[in-house]
Length: 187
Length: 187
View 1 (spheres, chains in turn brown, blue):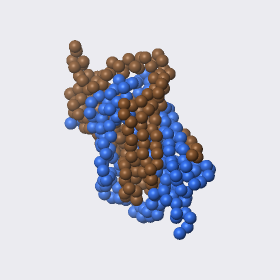
View 2 (cartoon, rainbow over the protein chains, first blue to last red):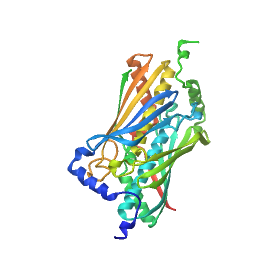
View 3 (tube, rainbow over the protein chains, first blue to last red):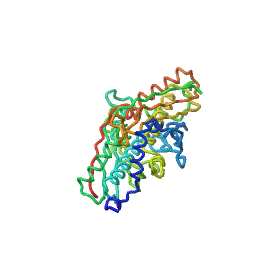
View 4 (spheres, helix red, strand yellow):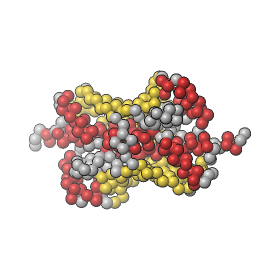
């Protein structure tokens, strides 16, 4: 047993590297489709459900089905039955980067003790309100502030986070454009 | 009472239009900061909390504090303690577009009866696994399929969805680039 193998962040790096090799050989298995359904409740309140996804050549299913409420807050004259849609994006961004930090730390033999992040998105709501055509609807910018306790130097910890950014799906979605195709049928 | 005023989708359009006018006069109140915290649990499992945000010139608070679990699924050699980070983005996208559909319908005097959407994001996971440098980490594309029952023609329903896209914060975040600044401190 080496010193590296004693590090345990709970990430199975061997399995991930094995999956990479296997999927490089059989790239059709690497084609995933992630899915959420959304159903309007009333006003700006809706409920989303996440259960199944497609990958490894077949339909897959999460262990449990989770329902998420989304709404606008009372300061938008709504009833605040759930967090806002943009906050869900921030939840996803923080979770994606943190999972990456853990995986990279495991791969580099760095023991993590605690990882905390505050993810903030600045927005001028005159955009979504249609009050100023020069203001974008989304975030003007996003800031993620990590505070990490690990058995490593600050420089090595910074390198973990940098590598996580390089491999993060949600970081890519937020920082780069993605085509969204919207189809409508009448029920 | 006009026919339009009898339409009730639960959105207070008058208040929103009033807010737009007031914030156009006092644009500093329109500067919002949305926030989520993220805390690593173990492996790729983390928990996010959404509670406060800044807007209308002061700190605000949701009526309830919500905690969200995120993880990778078992097919990624993880324990599936929550939905994946990218699924949170799909949850946010669907919720944002649906809230917009309800608000626009109210403004146009169209009664909604039901609004359902399936939001799907296609991803080649050889990107995040580092198996192919030509594959992006994020979605190759996203599709949103709406099925809407409303007292209106298909053409008018399609126009509702199109207008919602034009004013959607998350649609903007996904389709356009946003700068993300990541800072790291050692605890």
